[in-house]
Amino acid sequence: MDNILDAIVLLSNFVLIPGLAYGSQLALGALGVTLIFGILRFSNFAHGDLMAFGTMATILFTWWFQSMGFNLGVLPTALLALPFGIVVAVLMALLTDRMVYRFYRKQKSATIVMVMASVGVMFVMNGIVRLVIGPDDQRFADGGRFIIKANEFKDWSGLNEGLALRSTQLLTVVVAVMVVAWMFWFLQKTRTGKAMRAYSDNEDLALLSGINPDRVVMIAWILAAALATIAGVLYGLDKSFKPFTYFQLLLPIFAAAIVGGLGQPVGAIAGGFIIAFSEVTVTYAYKKFITYLVPESWAPEGLAQLLSTDYKFAISFVILVVVLLIRPTGIFRGKVV
Image (tube, rainbow, N blue to C red; front, side, top):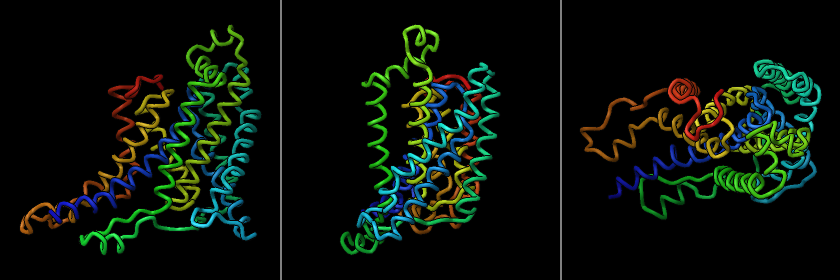
């Protein structure tokens, strides 16, 4: 019985808890992508770098608060800086819309033109972030590090494996649940949210009913920038901040949005967890886990790992291709790319 419990604890440490935290981060990122696609009808390739930009702004405010001696005790100071980072990211998103996307929107340009414009914005934002904060890893997490420590859990339970739960992992899941609940309340219950849904469903009919398209677009950018910053800060707290990593995150975020169904908020959340658990389960080395469950003579000699962690983003790519070939509308029947 103890071996089974050890196996469960081991799996929780390296698959279940990391998968939940990573899935929450991807879900928030995919929610922003699907929101922009639903309203503006193009895939925003600059979303990953908008995450990096908002996170960079939050880090700068965090460092400033830390130098002034401000903190939140056991909670990361980044939570104090997060609203300021969101404001900066929102201003950047509205500025890029004003300077780039609005022109093509007024010209009623083809979707591919908007997509290519977003690629240009992506490179510009990437350059700004690297110029301001540098290309290297930046750590900004402070406060309490663990909710449950492995050694304390082992002493308490008597098991060989100790359960470890980092405060950033719990914080990620709690914040993601709160943000997603608020987003659904906003879209379902408020007048602005209903106007956005109507505009997304049928633009012409929404315009005839008196909905202001400029206001809908502005709110969409504000929400997308806020979601991108929150997702980026949570990812940075959980791991670390490196501009190139956020550029790479674009692939799993898009895969999550497309797997769930572009334009479907529920699909974005489901897709985020599907992609996250696919990456974590495929790249985990199961040798020790299997050893707990089978007789010693049956234990595998190798790592029992399906794929190296170096190729984890390839899993998102494979899932993305398979979904586009078999079910282009995604699980929740979103819009076709």
